[in-house]
Length: 383
Ligand SMILES: Cc1cc2nc3c(=O)[nH]c(=O)nc-3n(C[C@H](O)[C@H](O)[C@H](O)COP(=O)(O)O)c2cc1C
Image (cartoon, rainbow, N blue to C red; front, side):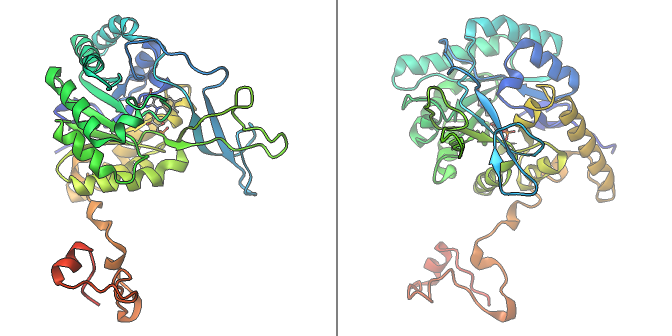
């Protein structure tokens, strides 16, 4: 069989498994049209809400850079390697009414590309839960192929919005279920990495009927303080609030979160996000069990919608399939999850010279009482 970049994810056919994630690259009709022209297999729109939002004064996103020859990190523009993006941008400042005709036009212009509508509402009472349904219904009526629930925006003050929903497994489940009641298209839940055990919130999403989980949104973080001025590198009138970290710095962090998810739910669908700018980065997500991946920071820095990034991703995948043709690999599905089960408990990693390690239990006098208990603690028995 001839190799193909196309893949099926949550029942949808993608011409390639690479999407722009919900963020500035997908904040307008013109950006999304340009993204499809550039070759992205899908886009997730900037998150759409019912009510207008007002962003802070000044820049909403800055880029932190690292010197190659010193430990210096700063947002000041200079020739240095990208460390991360930092943002405190809210959801789309355009409301559903603005988006509706545009979603229809985008879908009509590119019927074969996957258009995912990211949506967000409050979840504090029945009226607000109905807002989720209103958003979902309007987007699917315009031909959107899937919905992504933003349960992960890290800068919402309200306790029943964004990552504050994503930190509450019951609310995650309720919101997902409410949307599923009206959705005729797949529903993806985008979870926050800012929780202790993301598997709990993922279980809530799947119980609510989610077809896939997207992870990660940005990680809660602060800009650094300039040692000269003693001011935060991003601030308004001297004040700052926590924002979200994206880009290269979060690739290993996001992979760790994702591996927890794919191991807990090996038969479910996952869309990997965080720190991707090349096929090598994306490959990590595929190998631990993601069927698609999404990109934000790298695209923002590449003509706003990542024409070079998508070229590198697709040619990288084509080259990779060619290199592994002898294994019979013809699509990304042939290697999704191939390294998922290589991530194990520390006690399962081989020690030199037959030395045994029991997760610290015996050494500290906490030897488990029974083999069953040993199993529960994930303690290796071979030495
Ligand atoms: C400026 C900015 C705005 C963002 N807005 C949204 C948003 O509206 N909805 C959402 O789900 N994620 C949003 N994100 C998160 C990204 O979609 C993505 O999950 C995150 O940046 C990690 O990917 P990256 O490392 O490729 O940047 C935003 C990120 C940035 C940098």
